[in-house]
Length: 197
Image 1 (cartoon, rainbow, N blue to C red):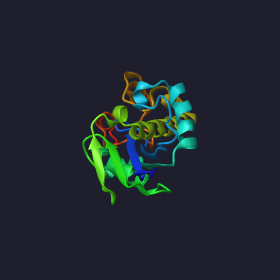
Image 2: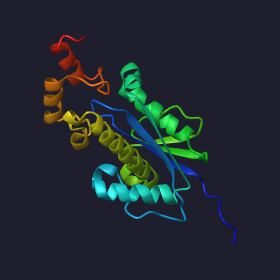
Image 3: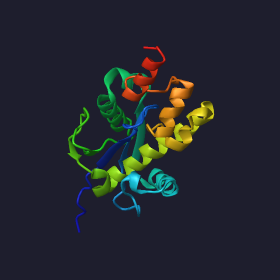
């Protein structure tokens, strides 16, 4: 029996559009169709423990994966949408194996040299996008824990830099760190109140 050629399908997603500090992280994953990973879905639907477990399985069993990001200064210069797109492009470009088609979570496509399709809520419907969402989220959370070690007073390990009431109170009390996104309104408001802008 003749085997049909497997199309190398890559899923891409990002983590960190909503937070007011830290990078936006993207991942690109080409899953092995002969080695499906049980439980892969939108990272937001999974517990931290489950994400960590799946992240290790994805890295072990995927045909190819890569993680890339845009730093805070790039986010402030480009805006978060363009920085997210750039991080996703970088993740695809960093893949050791180049895919034949890219599936991107959302309704916009980053600049790619490979044919691509945008899928709204793709992280829940396409395993390769779900896998990318897990890798991106786990990596961003890991970095937030590192920043927590550096700036413990801001409690980054807890809120992951999302604009929670607690986080906003902490930046009002302690000021803005170098990893805060100065183009984001909650951060701008604090800087203006403190006469720094």
